[in-house]
Image 1 (cartoon, rainbow, N blue to C red):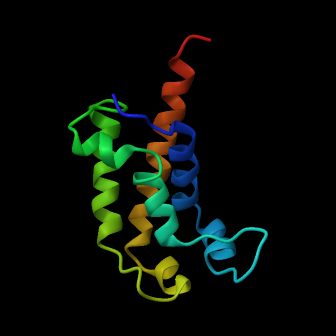
Image 2 (image 1 turned 120 degrees about the horizontal axis):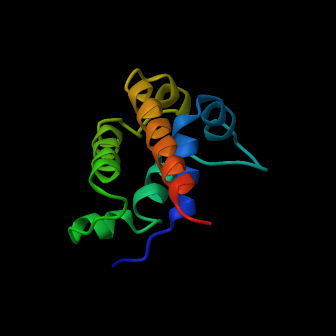
Amino acid sequence: MSWIGHEDIRRQLKHLSDKSYQERVWTASSGPEVSSFTEAVCQLYDGTGLDIAYKKGEQVYGEKIDNLLKNLGAMLDGISERRPAIQIIEDEKMIPVRKTAAHILGLLEQEDTKKPA
C-alpha cells in the first residue's frame, strides 16, 4: 500500500469546497495565506499519494469514495488553470467541484465517526 496523506486530503477537499476561502486565498498577492487552484489540485492528488495509489490500482477509502475522488479529478482536469484566479473561482464548472469536494469530505468524516476510539 502506498503512503497516503489523509489529513492533507481532507485539507485540500475543504479548500476546494469553500468559495470564500478561494476568494480570500487564491486571489491574495501576499501572505499570510496564499495558494492557488493549481496548488490545491496538485496537493490533493500528487502531494498526498492519491495519484500514485490510483495508478497502481490500489483502493484507498473504498469503492464509493475512491470513485468520487477519481470523478473529482476528472472535473478538475476540465477546468483551465491558465487564467486569473477569480475567473477560475467564478467558473460554473467549480460549482459541482465544490459540491463534490464537500460531499467527499462529509463521507470521510462519517467514516471517522464509525471507527472505534
